[in-house]
Amino acid sequence: MATPRPHGTLLMCALLLMSGAACQDQPEENDGSDTRLSTAAGDILAATQDSTPPIFTQVPAGPRVSLGPPATPPSQQGALDIATLGFDLGNADAPVRIVEFSDYGCGYCRKFHMETWPTLRKDYIDTGKVLWKTVPFVIGNWANSVEASMGNECAVEQGKAARMTTLLFERQSDWKSVADPAPPVAMIAEAAGLDMTTYQTCLDESRYLWRVQAHSSLARQVGVRGTPTFFVIGYAPVQGALPLELFKQVIDTVLAKVEAEGR
Image (cartoon, rainbow, N blue to C red; front, side, top):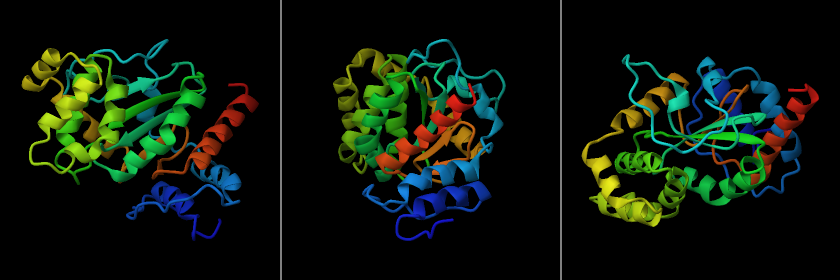
């Protein structure tokens, strides 16, 4: 295994998560110039293959994933159907499936969504290569994340979750530390194109609070210890705001493997 300093920390985090040890520190930044990036993706995937929790076999959920209204609460307490949680982008027949757990208050989640996500979406999700499920997870470090997550659930209802998520991260400083996050989150919802009467009714009725709670239950069930955490289906979790080039190489490695196996 490569020496974990200076840029091997990303690989070490993934291996520690696989073994059940916590990777407490935030991952180190990487400018993408390290020559070890070319082998790090293969090392991560080879070391963590076939370690995905069984619940993720429920992804995807249909012929074409859309951002429609959230499903109704499960009839049995504690029953979690991942197909009804979070929100999905991409083709359900995509050869690679990724589940992301992020907290709207997390600085490293913001880093990922501002610097890495736009290119991943353009190159892999929009081209039908990857089905991506985002599960907002209130990890407990930022109280206002609850308000942000509730706002996003009301955005899911109106098919605007992807845009709402982008704006929540982009304008994180507007709502993260204020005494009352409701007004700035509402302004973000309006900027995302939501019908504000429907949005306010959704919040007043706490219509999807159960989903915010279910996301946390799911994260605990699959062993998420930090955000962002990504499950490339078929492998153990990879934690941290990986640099773009490394994330692309992880996906490309999986795509090549799927193609070689004729799947």
